[in-house]
Length: 402
Ligand code: ACO
Image (tube, rainbow, N blue to C red; front, side, top):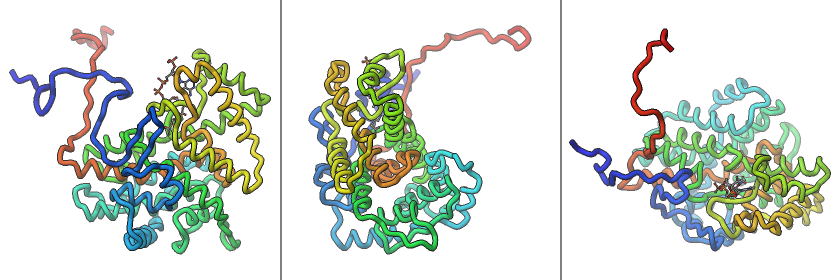
């Protein structure tokens, strides 16, 4: 008899690692992350330098194609993306079918999945030209899909993309413009959004990226794989945390602003309450993205002279937690989501859209990983094993005797 678990690299042993804490699922040349030292680099470039010097579209290019673009490459890339920003008119009817109070992440995931019904000419994961078109389509259409989901939530007409605007300007215009009224995009908001999208753009094998790779490993098309990633991101322990942070801060304010009381609650396991925006599977010192975002948040509120009580409470909460033995011992620090919500609020983005913005930022990372996986000579379908803990063989009981 052949022991099939030893075929093609199997050892016959199964490693049990719930939550994949120590299991590498792949090799990757996209993002380097050192959780102890708080280092994050995309394709070798430190996140701090990219955030300070780049436009989000440049970072998209870097992640997906591996190098910073030349001016000519960047212009061609931007122009190609611009050509694809419109949604097929028939796709608008999807939005009629969703209830007004549908969560925009549910809409985003559904409509992205539906792209595979409208763009059937770019579904083959093994055809480089089709893959390229589907990448450009996705990058171009996601902001349109996202902005439409917001307009749907309060019944305003959709605003068509405007292709002479930059990626971020165009998104803000589709979100906030009203037909027949002049609309001015605030350059500070554009810069803030650009920065937030860059710091969210990739984070190696996180839950949603692993999902994209897992689904893609079965040769599912890019739209279907990204739709699955969006669903994974929606979870409050992952991308959904930015929305949960703001809800938590609002709750603290409503209950009198006592941050110490909330810290105590978060330490009590019985309460099932966690300090949202705190802790990270990999960062055990500080999250470099949180440092960048906090500075940007400070700058923006200061420049626009915005007094947001949420920011004050967030700072107090951070101070209380960082001086508490429970959080210190477990190396729990603010993560990328702790302050991003304060910036989104300053820009005027409603809370329900926060995770959608995260998805727009993470899209190039997901695509880069999907593409890297398909380019690998050793690609196999992802298929983890398990350690079975159920019943041993049992005798079948006919229904009348149960
Ligand atoms: N508040 C209170 N206690 C916490 C928190 C928190 N935010 N995070 C972790 N802990 C505690 C756990 O209860 C556990 O304590 P124990 O050792 O006494 O049992 C210990 O710290 C380790 O926590 P785990 O859940 O094992 O850590 P894990 O790596 O599995 O989870 C996670 C990481 C999901 C990010 C977690 O810290 C968390 O739930 N944070 C809040 C949600 C959040 O902000 N998510 C966004 C993450 S960033 C991103 O996805 C973009």
